[in-house]
Amino acid sequence: MQFYLTAICLGLSLTMLGWGIYLSLKIFNIPDITTDGSYTLGAAITAIQLSNGSNWQLALLFSFLGGALAGMLTGFIHTRLRVNALLSGIIVMTALYSINLMIMKRSNIPLLQVNHVFASIELVSNPYINQIFLLLAVTLLIGFLLFYVLKTDFGIAMRATGNSESMVSAMGVNTNRMKIIGLGIANALTALSGSIVAQLQQFSDINMGIGIVIFGLGSVMIGETTMTLLKKNGILWRIFGVLFGCVVFRLIIAFTLASGADPNLLKLITALVVLVFVSLPQFNKKLSS
Amino acid sequence: MLEINDVNLTFQAGTAQEVNALKHINLSIEKGSFTLLLGSNGSGKSTLLNILAGTLLPNSGKVLLNGKELQNEAAYLRSPCIARVFQNPTLGTAPDLTLLDNFRIASLRTQSKGLKIGINAAFRKKVAKHVSILNLGLENRLDQFMGSFSGGQRQALSLLMATFDTLDLLLLDEPTAALDPRSAELVLNLATRIIKEKNLTAIMVTHELQHCIKVGDRIIQLDQGGVIRDISATQKSSLRLEDVFAWFA
Image (cartoon, rainbow over all chains, first blue to last red; front, top):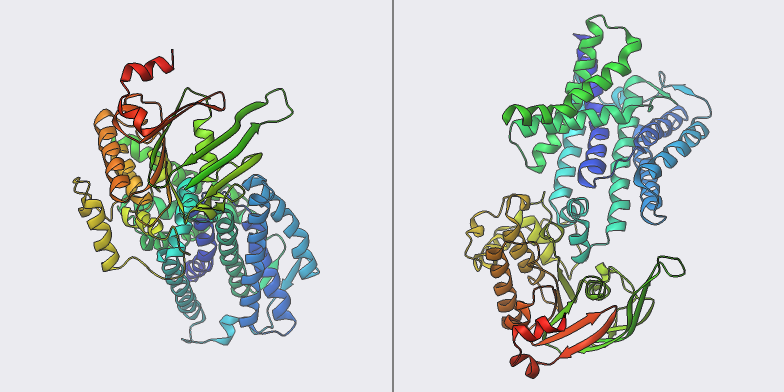
């Protein structure tokens, strides 16, 4: 049971990352793999701050800002220097590996004796349930904030930028600026996720972000596919779908490992789960026709 | 008033693929007039429209709208005074946004897009009234995604969106080219009606020679990047379709 509770906690912690990918991929139509770097960046900033005696509030704030800067840099390279979006993300992600090492000064920082968010706030005595309550509260708060932003005039302009750039430009939107801001928000959420996971797992590792973009992508696809099957097309449902996707994805991985699968095959299992959910809409179309 | 002074544009200058798309274009378009830009493929009419919209910038020359120089401004900076209807209805609307969302963006063409929720009951009522002039029942489908409408419906909505807010110049880039005859007639009639009712200055690029007889006050024919014919309203009133065909002989 404890194994699955941990999986739910991790799924909730990674929901912000899922929303980051939802923003870049689904809203802006940009395959942004800065994610791998900005996720670790959030964890690195958090680890160095907490281990130096700073409080978790500042650690979360600086992680968020660090991720925003990384995303905006990708946006700048893509829009102002006219570099392909995928390549821009690869450039920043590669640079972030060294930057994260510079921040952490070593490849791994344990956070066992620090005052992290889960040690500071106790809603219930059971630590696992406490973590779930805390994470649910934070996730729902950020989810509703994201929903609000996407429903505002600015949010509509954001959504239109990825959907019909020619139209939105003719309607007075600076699409380059919008993409820079959008990628900034996406990577800020990703870094926030990295910060929370570092505090949850009580360590930060330089390699913790490798391949995390695949998890995020898979979660978004699980959410999208489920919501499409349920015929729920509104923004709120799509945002909730990502949360659902992140938790379900972690539970699938937990169930697979609990069933005795070789942990060395974890990435292969992850890739297969993503493949299934990415291709599910096509199978569904063929079955319908 | 729109003035185009000695505008030139060369694509891929200095290479073997160099194309002089526009050569010394000089035009003066009166306020409240409806001008048709006519020409064969590659004549430069769409390039000229793109220069007016701001999606292309000229190598030299000036574009002045009501005395304000625009030739170096990006498309989004021109949006407070210029609106555009694209040839392809999918370019002029956002398919994954609802009809209401699309009109919300259109309503903010001259304003900043802030962190407030602008779609309320009053806005919904305003959009419903605006789209009801189409008589297509779209006022009851405000929450549907734009992508669920037909090409003709989307083009008509695109035209309504372009003219939803105040503007000085309306650019129509072959608005009926991608539509079936019935939808094309709907969009053309709607465009003519709106231009007349709002006394708009409008420029329409067209390949349809019948348009020269049916609509507009003035015809400008382009060929190989230059103006080769300028037909005034008086000359146009006595124009026959055979005369227009003869221009392309």
